[in-house]
Amino acid sequence: MTKPSNPVVWRAVFLMAAVCGIGLAWKAGQGYTPDRQSIALGQDLFTHAWEVNDELAAEGDGLGPVYNAESCVACHFQGGVGGAGPNSKNVLTFLVAPIDRGQPVHEGVVHASAVSEECEETTALIRELFPPTPGGVTNDGMCRVRVPSVDPLTFQTINTPALFGVGELSKITDQAITWNRWKRNLSMMGQEMRGNWNMIPTGEVRTLDDGRIGKLGWKGQFADLEEFVAVACAVEMGLSNPLKQQLLPRNAASARVNITDSSAKLDLDQQQFDALVAFVESLPRPEQVLPDDPEACQIIHEGEDAFHEVGCAECHTPSIGGVDGIYSDFLIYRIEPEENEGNNGGGYGPPIPDDWPEDIPEPAEWQTPPLWGVADSAPYFHDGKSPTLHAAIERHDGAAKLSRERYRKLSPHKRSAILRFLESLRAPQVR
Ligand code: HEC
Ligand code: HEC
Image (cartoon, rainbow, N blue to C red; front, side, top):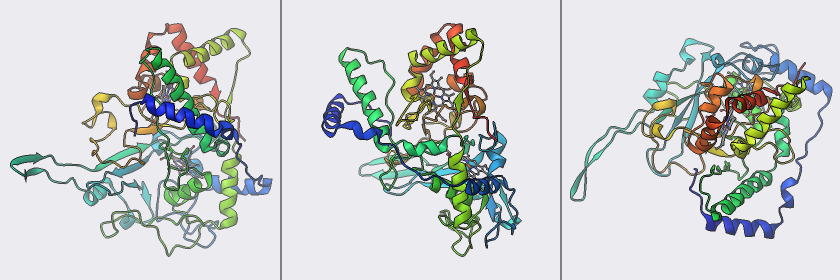
């Protein structure tokens, strides 16, 4: 998705922006205020350990048939209810690249658990469903062409993010995200005119099928919190709800796509589902915690300055759409090392076909995660493979390589000041 910059396009974009009047960008999102009772019920549902035929299930079968954990809080708990999760709770997903032009990308989850043995899902089963296409030699007119074998399947392990402040995301309009992107492109254009080509590229927005911009999930795959919660219920725990039915277990007989269980009755009725959404939406936002000691405080401020100086703030935009201290531009980047291209190195999977669909991030592309609360959400990166903040920074390559190089060149004092700054971004003190 990430395209090389084009100054002519920027100029056109600038003109358009000027003509349209960008004041729109700051339009705040609106929401309703749910009552305390509803939020309390939502918290009970979030922390409840679900069972098969659970007593809380409205009229459905409770947990399963396939699921990843018994409760939301089993994964979302670090730094309080609703927090991030450890690697032991990572979710195993897979992507199937289109073999022929125009085919969709298949995405799915290999569930960790099932209510019975015959429902269990395994990577071997998914492998069987999506085998590599055999290579060989074909005749292309006069020439014999060797066609390599293609493996369309990539498994990815996904770490649980924290949900603190996730309700604030609804305030960030699509215009705020595109305006911020334009501003950056514009400033890059100015720099290029001054002969400076050494810059951090701007990422792409994730435009969903219905035209909205995605900002939830590691790949920005959802625009709306309610929809994400519906999918989390159905996919992680097998809880059918008014927006999404539980999944049928994948097995050799069930087809290649995720099939929802159309005969399933509701595990969460409308009132329960609304309450769960209200609770998640009500989770307080992370906060910066500054120490009383003025010297320690000074180092954090120096770290914040250095964070801007080396270009972290280009992607980890401190404020966007009226939400201060969030540290994300909600754009999609490829920040894996280039040498990983064409092999399985770094866990980023096989090379992808040339005709990968424009609107779906490639296996190695991820959305800039907000850094608020980052001190309490280790391990880091989409796969949780970076145990510390330092390791996470060191792993920045590709589009973020320049800022990592600048970080490495900082004095040890300034490098550790950046870490102190990130460590001041804490989960809220919840319940
Ligand atoms: C097995 C662990 C697990 C369980 C159980 C789980 N989640 Fe999650 N949650 C995740 C992972 C992993 C992601 C990131 C998914 C992605 O981006 O592909 C996530 C992401 C989310 C997000 C999006 C957050 C963001 O800022 O992008 C929401 C909202 C969410 N979960 C809510 C819930 C709710 C509500 C429940 C209970 C019904 C739940 N989750 C149960 C692991 C879990
Ligand atoms: C080109 C954009 C870009 C720049 C510049 C950038 N980052 Fe990132 N950052 C990302 C993306 C994208 C990810 C997620 C990658 C993934 O999960 O595979 C990320 C992840 C992180 C994480 C892990 C967050 C988490 O919740 O797991 C930290 C910490 C971080 N960046 C800090 C920094 C710091 C400090 C700098 C400056 C030295 C920086 N970043 C520069 C795009 C950027």
